[in-house]
Length: 299
Image (cartoon, rainbow, N blue to C red; front, side, top):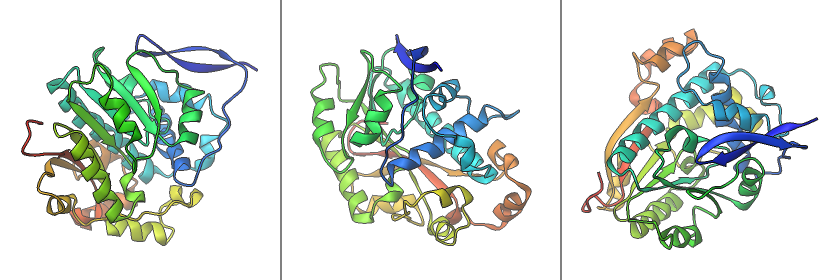
């Protein structure tokens, strides 16, 4: 039976025929790449979707995995979809200011963000561990402005590749969605310092998991995460804590997910909606627009 393979043709997703679906052979953390894909695919069926990503459906059709088996956790779906939308909003802000910049999506998994945000000028690098990139290459092909790089967020090989790109102009947006919470605090400090040293004019988009959500995960109250063994590690009460690590770091803006009164909040299951009214902001996912060097010119 023939299946469709996503290709990059002038920067947009098209399809061609291949005979087999791509097999999943992933590590503990990499396997969580299925979660955001699951949320984006489910959003396509909603009357009032928080994010519309047609490419996600094509990617899902190419992997040998039944995403429906991950369940129907409405709370996780809303939070992930709202998180995607918030990251897109911040990314668009940077891209509007720097239309010919370089965008690096760390731990990209099966992300199709390039298809949603490309303006025809960006240089885009999707970075992940080797097994994840092998899977990604079997589904989404590269083209002249979009590249897949195998590399660890803890190392610098991928950084050198990007900095030696002839079209690199110093403006760099690094997207770290749903990744830093799986590292210890000292590792996150190392990662951000490494980013700042390499890209002083850069901005990093990142999110945090609060201690409350970590506890909820450990007690088995996050239905969707029961399928996976990866553990949350770095869970600060407030993202602004990173400003005390290095005087170059500046959280220029942030969002809380889900925030009361938003479309995402209205989509929450009734029980979760009631609970959210009584939870403080310390219990929410925080997404930050972080200047890697506030003394430089990045905005």
